[in-house]
Image (tube, rainbow, N blue to C red; front, side, top):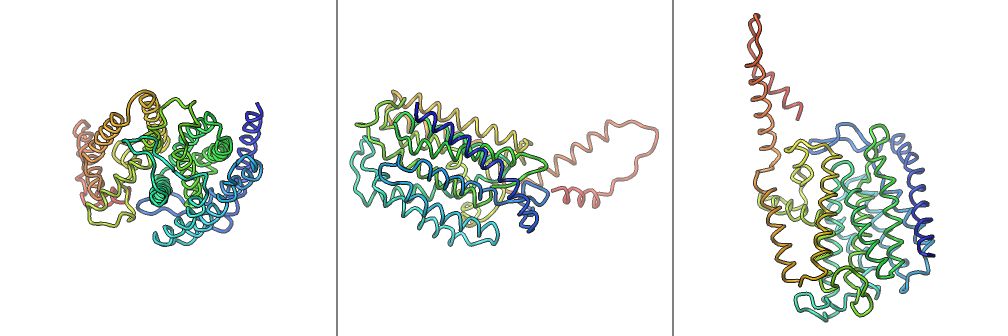
Length: 396
């Protein structure tokens, strides 16, 4: 009962703090003209305020203050330095673009504080693929790589209105449930605080007159917290926790299913860029959400909702399977699903130039069909191909 009262108070406080301060952030950003101006890759057409992630930072700092004492190994004191590093780097990247190398280096410094805390040490994979005890140095390698992957994967899906927030909300709801069932109340409350902030932010992100983006400031912070929760989830021991609806030996596969959207999108985009002989961090419009919008004609809200629902259904499926199935069968299932998704999204060449040509061709065909159906006594004026082509180029 005490946890429930604390959780409700924390949720309401975090939600209101975000909801009431974001309009102030928008006013300052507009006054200082720190807008995110659109370019050829952007999904928005007008300059939009960014720095919405600033609200995530101070909400989490307040939350860590109020839930202090529930962390057995003083995890809060280790989270704050890493959180501050990524906040400063994300803020600078939103104002003055920094190189991927500098951003990656800052992430390494941030995760060092987490890996140094004994609460996050992965002592065993609990029999996953017959792997039990693992040495400390291997934990550092696995944990560090995993955290950097999650942070950057989440950062990369922040490309359309609502997507990063919706996916973040789904992930945090799942982790809240897991840590509540395992009585890890500190991490459950941390997830609740960030979730409340994301829900308040989502309304502004989808708004037409008070729109704001979370920017790298927000996506790095949210990705960092999600990576911490994932690391803690994998560090749970089966001897202590028995109330989970799945076998703890399947925890690595459950974690992958929880993070399937950012992980799959990142793997897919990196593969396309490397195949096209480009750097993995080179910008383009090959993300899954861009495909849904550019090629399948969905709106931002529709694409975000569909991806969020897929994430939730995918996790539900693996939780059900993980309650009885052995890891080898689940690995086969996971690989099969990834191959199927890969086939769907690799079936077409989603290169931006090719996509643009397909859209132009489709519009020309539709226009010719429309003109063929028109009937009238007046003679039609000859079409100026050069003018039509330039107009459609400007539309894209």
